[in-house]
Length: 347
Image (cartoon, rainbow, N blue to C red; front, side, top):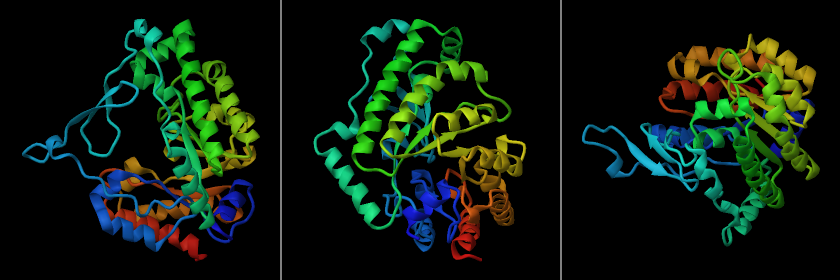
């Protein structure tokens, strides 16, 4: 099987010749571990787009004080000023252009990066080159809840959604149209699948009732997902936290694969059983806040084997997902990839 064939088989719950593997190009891991991390990734190639030669980021000297502490403010194309204290990791909104709804009338979405001169042609060429190498390519990264609470204070957005006011609906529709254009461009570039993502849960419950999610978000996501499916694309959805009540809804609107936060659920076995019942494939992402950051290599190895068993990875319906955040001990990353490598080699 090529990587593309292997991913397609996993999404269709068909047996695979070896466990599918996806890497995420997280700059922080490369910043902390550099060429050593690159070496591990190159020794265990994945099935999705290859990021092993992604540049190793470096902070601006002006953003690091005499004691080596990083602190920086950056304003993005949406007009949000972010405060960052961990280099190459998302910060927190410091100034938000829609903190006052009075600014909504003059607010405009920025241009799409792929709409810039020559960008679409370069991206389509890159997609084709990756696919020629046998890699499965995802596009998108589409979500609008997190964009809303970047533009406007988080608590206000939650209350706005609860009140179902005119302004929050207007903003959501504006952002959805922006995402629809991004989706169209990604599909036009020839990607295999589309990644959606919004964090809707805490470690114990959803951020809002399932009923409110279904009334506010579900119709909008249904339209986006339907467009992707009409273009023949697989649909992936990431959401951190506990979102078990809406898993059937995501499957109903056409989602093919979930990337859940495993520790937010009762057990890997219970979640695996539920996802298999729904015919939702799973991206297996080993707990990064606990095991990958504070655990021992043997804990990492055990977690990989337990997840692979629970999700029955040889018979499809699951793939490994690797993302290296800040403060992962290198020996834990090595243990993670060594354990995954056993399933890549059939051991």
